[in-house]
Amino acid sequence: MKGVNILLTLSVLGLATFIASAYDPGPLQDFCVAIDDPNKASVFVNGKFCKDPKYAKAEDFFFSGLNIAGDTTHKVGSNVTNVNVDKIPGLNTLGVSLVRIDFAPYGENPPHTHPRATEILVVVEGQLSVGFVTSNGQDGNRLFTKVLNKGDVFVFPIGLIHFQFNPGKVPAVAFAGLGSQNPGTITIANAVFGSNPAINPEILAKAFQLDQKIVEELQKKFWVAN
Image (spheres, rainbow, N blue to C red):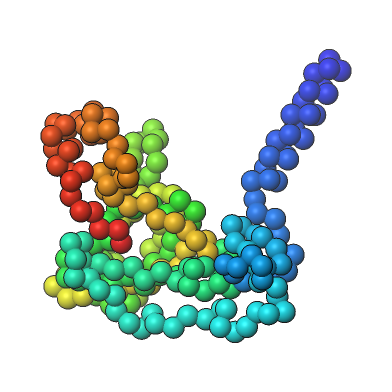
């Protein structure tokens, strides 16, 4: 019995250590401005070298241009303007970023995921049909969808496939906040049919229950990375 108690104690301690390590540690400084030149860095945090805080300036926390509409004259009819750590170095370690999404009439932001961030979106012009699909479960892959008008807000949980579509005859504009300074984007069609090198068509044909020739044709298409 004593041995069982010791094993249980060790298991609980191990689990507690794992849970603790699953979260980012609390920040020990006000900010960590990302810098590309390691020779001018003081520390390395979260994939970026950090500028010595005494050399930080207001421009490290500034971006201008979200008033400018993005080019939507391509196949999917939308444009995402990212404001992440690559645009604002001061975002590094702060866990937030922002995007502007422009939609042509009937344009869409194709089904995609953000592997590192939840997204909260607000429509500022026009109308959008949006939705996300849950992960595999007892109820299958459930679709949550809603038509949004100007001023409406919708949340897309972290890692789940989601989309936005403009059903109107006029352009639409939305802004979205994301819970990561570098949320990443995986556009489903691009990743599946436009990977480099290409996924074996036989594998995709079986997965999607398609004729292999159809898969090969899809792989030849030019997929827009939004």
